Length: 510
Image (cartoon, rainbow, N blue to C red; front, side, top):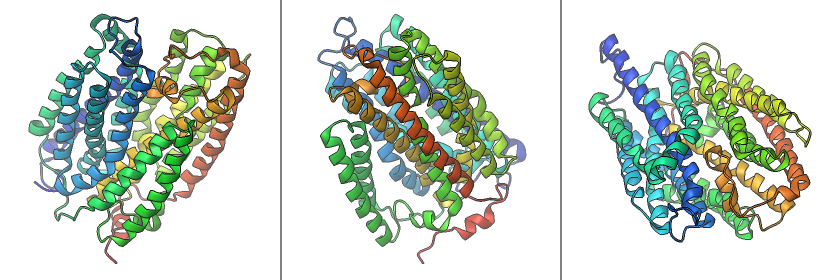
């Protein structure tokens, strides 16, 4: 079956059942993916601690940094190429393949006992995640009517933040009693269930009726560009980090030149020029993620090394944002089905801006309540922004581009996060000295968990640390102001009936 199994192809009860099935599967997958990542961050110090009986021989913090980074790179680099492929060959098919790859890699990782094999199979697992992330939103967009998409997106995105919320505590229990390998093994049964349900319970397939030629050359250039950019920002406190970023600019220029020349590009750049709503929605996502993604990293050091709070207390405080995001995401998504998109996304970004302004004025005497309120405003802002903005983007493109557009949403998020964390790392390096290693910061940034590297002590530099934190927050405030403006500039859209917009923006050879 091609196209959309909705009321014109299925009876209303069957169509509704299919929607609920798809949303349940994708939400469970989102939860498991987030839970797995956050639980792994809890396991990371155990794996690198030479005094731990579970220590992986030869694995140090630099090696763990690679294990974390390679997963993120694989997930980011491969989303758009496989999003394009899913539009041609079937989004459900690619989703199932991605789930199988992710689950199989998790099973193998549970048996690995060396840095090299862990890095290799974390890359494989990241590739599986890329296939899943590239198609999940596209499937929901394909199966849900326009007036219910926001609700679906909100529940799916809320599941991610729920996984991030329960992952540290439940993951800590699992690691303590069953060991770090159980973090990988715990994913396997859920992965099998998700793949089975997607393959045999969810009916239908969603793909273009006419296959388009895949621009493999453009895909390779794109992957190289994103690798250089993301790894460059991950290593920005080193000299070669800037070289990598510079090289990514050159390959990006070549990519743009190639995509404008090729008949069927891997990423249709004309859409950014012709579709104002699409362009500003993506720009807003990039700016908002860049402004806010380092918040937990900055506050983690502030709470532990300026206010001298314990790791456990700092971790509890930092949960305020993901909890707020988990609660508000379904609400924000539902509101986007009833309120014009520009209104709700702009309110969300503005709310996040209020939280950043609060945090920009922290000092040694700041009451912890102010920090909590700053986090809550940030979480509420993201809850009101994430799913409505995804709804905006997916509602502004033709059906044939659902896969690649779904992948683009994830890519904007990853690029923004990497630049945000890279800039924070650079500030720490400048103010605290070049010996602060990027791998150490990756422990504290991965899934926003408070894990202290065993060989890093910066509390003695708390005045300089505080200065770097405040500068980072003031820069974030500036970026968030731009995000508010960008969100408003997207313009209006008839979000309940966007056929005319899709037809207007249908990409042709001409």
